[in-house]
Length: 316
Image (cartoon, rainbow, N blue to C red; front, side, top):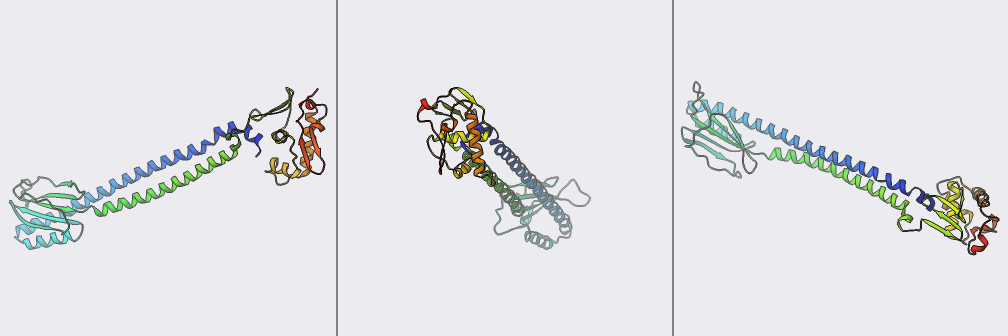
C-alpha cells in the first residue's frame, strides 16, 4: 500500500489494531485463571480422597486390633502394622493402657515420639504434619465400652502420591497455558509488526503535507489543492498524484507505478496507468491551464510531475 493510503487509514488502524491484542490477552488471562482454579479444585479433591482413604485404613486396623488385644495376640497386630508400612504407611504406634506395645516405622520416615501416658482421643483424629504427611489417631475401643478407650492407634501416611498427581496436573495446565501465552505473544507480535510496517512511513516522521509549488497534498486529510483550489480526486488518482509529488521531476515508468499503486492487483497493466494519467490530467485541468505540461510524458521512459519553476505552474 502506498503512503497516501497509509495516511488515510492511519487513524483507523490505530483504533482497531489493538483490538485483537487486547481480546486475545483477556481470553488468555481468563483461561489461565480457569486453569489455576481447576488445579486447585483438583488438588482439593485428591487430598480429600487421601484423607478418606487414610482414615478408613486406620479404622479397619483399629477394628482388628481390638480383637487381637482381647486375645493377647500382639504378634498379629505387629504383622498388620508392618503390612501397612509396605504401602503408603510411614509409621505405626499402638498404645494400650499407657504402654507402647507396637512401634514400627519406615527407615526414611521422620517420626516424633508418642506419649503413652497421654489420654487417648474420644474420636478419630486426622491431622497434617509440618512436612505434609498425614497422621491419624484412632481410639481403641472394646465392645460394650464405646466411651472408654483403652488405648490409641497412631498411623502416619505419606502424601507423595497425591503431591505427584497434583504436580502432573499442574504441569499439564502450565504447558497448555504456556503454549497459549506463546501463541498469543506470536499473534500480538505479528499484529504489531503488520501495523508498524503498514504505518512505518508515518512513524518515521514523513511529512503529512506535501508542498510542490502551488500544489499541496494533505495525506492525513486525503485532500489535494492547487493554488488553494481543491482538486476532486478518487483514491487511486490521489495515490498517483502523491507518488509524483513525493519526488517531483523524477520519471516513473508504467512498471514502477503499477508496483507502487496497483501492487494488490494481479490484473493491472500499463493500460490502467495510461488511463489514470489521462483522468488525473483531466482533474488537474480544472485548476491548471496546461495539465500535460504539469504531468509530463517523457517519451519512452514514463511520466513525471514538473514543479521546479513555480511561476510556470501557477493556475488560472
